[in-house]
Amino acid sequence: MTDQFLSPHISQSALNELPVLRITNDRASATISLQGAQVLEYTPLDGDNMLFVAHGETFSQGQPIRGGIPICWPWFGQHPTLTDAPTHGLARELVWQYKVVADSDTRTDLLFWLDCDGQDPAFPYQARAELLISIGSSLVMSLTTLNLGSEPFQLSQALHSYLACQDHQQVRIQGLFDRPYLDKLTGKTGHFPHAFSFDREIDWVVSDLGQPLLLSGLGQNAIQMTRLGSRSVVLWNPSVEKSQTLSHFLPDEYRQMVCVEASNALEDCRLIKGHSSHVLVMELAAVDVDATEPA
Image 1 (cartoon, rainbow, N blue to C red):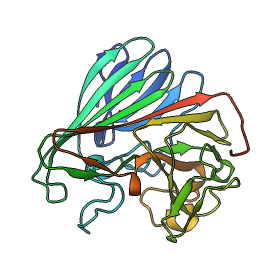
Image 2: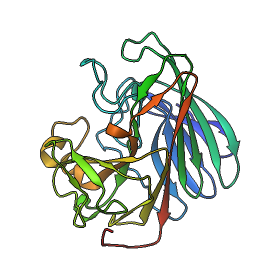
Image 3: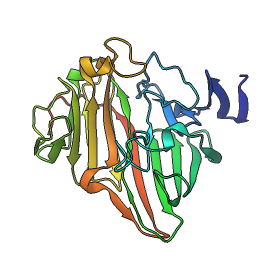
Image 4: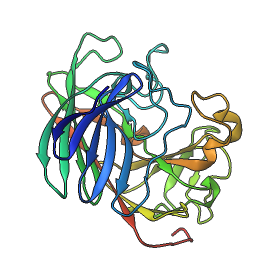
C-alpha cells in the first residue's frame, strides 16, 4: 500500500493486512492501527519507542495484535457470562472510524469511535466508545464510554499497555506501595511490597487511588503514568512457560516487555447509567530519572 498523506504530519499506510496511521511531528512519532484504534508505537523526540510489539506479530485482519496498547472494552478479561465471547471485549478486533481533530508541529490529535447497536448478545446495549489520542511531548489517551440507551450496563476496561524494556526483572514501579492487590493466578490477596519484581508470571490487579506511577529500570528513560477515572492498575507478564502458549511471542520475548495498565477492573468496574458516560484517561511521558527503589 502506497502511503496516503492526510496532512503534513499524518499518513495512512499498512502493516500486512492492517491499515495504520503514521504520525510524525516535532515532538514525537507514532503508529496507530485502525483495527482496535491501537497505538503500536510511540517515540518521543530524542527518545526510545515506549511500546513493545511481538516480533512474530502477523498483523492479520480480525486477529488481536500482540503488543502496543490494546483497548480492552467493554469488558476486561473473560466475559462475565458467555464463555465463547472474545477475551477482553469487542474493540480489539473491529475497525474504528476516525477523524483528525487537530494537527500542528507540536501535537496531533485524532478521535476514534466505535458504535454498538445493541444486537450483539455479548453486549446488548446501544453505546459508543470514543478514543482521543494525542501525540506530542507525551502520549495521552482518553477513552469515553457513552451509554446511548436508557438501560444501565456494567463496564470493565483497560488500556492494556505493553511497555518496552531490556530486562523485565529490572523494572520497578513507584506509587503502589502498600496498596491492596489480587493475584489472579492464585486468588491470594496482599499489599503491594517494596520489593516487587516481574520475576515470575504476574497477573495482578492493584486497587489504588489513581495516583501517578513511575516506571524505572526499563533500560531507557523512565515513564511516568498519570490517570483519571481509574482506581485500579493491572500488572502482567507471562514469563517463560505462559509465553510459549501465546500467539506471536518469539522465545524469550517476554523479557522485553511488562504490562502496566490503566484500568477499571474488579471492584473498580463502573455502572454506566442510561444516557450517561465514563471517561478513562492515561498519559505516558518519558522522564529523565533513574529511580531504582520502589516507594
